[in-house]
Length: 125
Image (tube, rainbow, N blue to C red; front, top):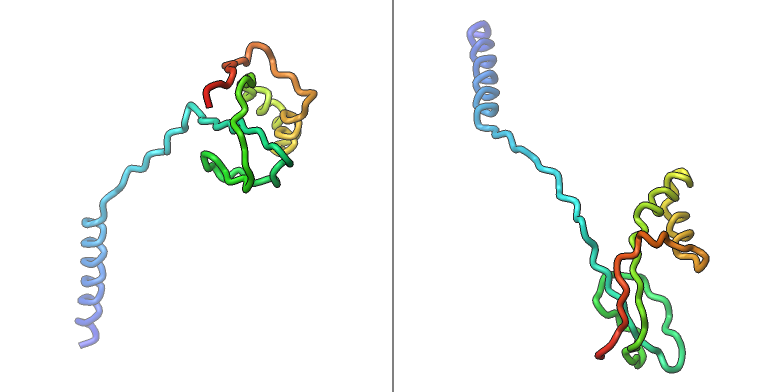
């Protein structure tokens, strides 16, 4: 009985393996597309008494500063593409992203004039 039982078990396992392989479908995966543009929201607000406490940027359109604010018109915003400078600084600093961000955010940093994207004067609110 044992001799005839062993081939039956092996055959059953082989059949189960064949069925599972036959019913499994291969799925082709696709890499997510990398966005080519970025939306930047600038809050042109004037705070009358004191500056609000700093808040982490959570992506909301208008954060709650918990005090009265007034739209600030007549301000010139100049937008530069500093992507090349950023990645050059990251490479120069051994991959330190925060160091590159700090360098770009300093008042002494001057972007190349060729990286100017837009210049807009605020009005109308």
